[in-house]
Image 1 (spheres, protein in one colour):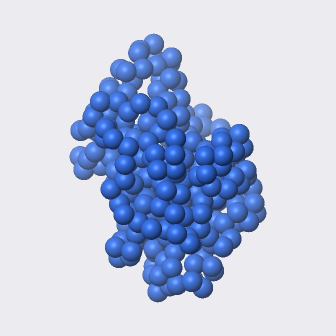
Image 2 (image 1 turned 60 degrees about the vertical axis):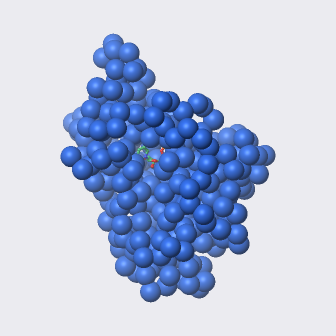
Length: 272
Ligand SMILES: NC(=O)c1ccc[n+]([C@@H]2O[C@H](COP(=O)([O-])OP(=O)(O)OC[C@H]3O[C@@H](n4cnc5c(N)ncnc54)[C@H](O)[C@@H]3O)[C@@H](O)[C@H]2O)c1
């Protein structure tokens, strides 16, 4: 894979865009971007995409081996970090022009059984850590009069699903935080937006599919079609590169008026 190959490493299923490529013409030469959760899935696709646009990319993740592999491919600089360590999260964010708050995890459980320590961890990783990252990044962005905060939210930032209390709470919180940053950043040339995908073909979702397939004794394809995509009019998972392209768009000059928005990439799931 070269830095211009924005697809994930596995073959795309029918219906997904056939060719590797980019539709947004954005030059990020001279910009530094932080991508959290850069080792896998959407974060990885964003890191590859921003690097292909010329940005110097800080790759923040727990998975050091995957970061080293990306660095070997010239995608960016590995920053192995546990982002639930909030001071470490601030440290990795100082001096960047672009932040992609993406690292996330999922736990599926009814509220009455939801482990409280897991709820706290999800809120810390997916809401408090983005706050600390943005807090540390803004002074440099304000000094330069330009910055881009892109929060990878979810349809679950706009809609709820049963059994995902921590995730839905964190994403709804991220939505509110993003809008406040949009208001404060506007006079300084800094935009803040959420990107809201439906189900994306990443390890996070592949694990949910495998878990449900095991729990209900049904094939994985049936879980995808009848459970995950039940409310999606487009019956396929989204490719990580399709989300990354929206992130690239938000970084281009023509997107300077797109601020405080939540941009769905969900095949019209949330339109229903
Ligand atoms: N996959 C989807 O269907 C989907 C849909 C909507 C939104 N999202 C959001 O997109 C983001 C990325 O999801 P993904 O599907 O690419 O997941 P993924 O599991 O493929 O990647 C998540 C990455 O975050 C890293 N990470 C987890 N905990 C960390 C920590 N404490 N410190 C540092 N790094 C940590 C993991 O190591 C992993 O590399 C998440 O915020 C998720 O909520 C995903």
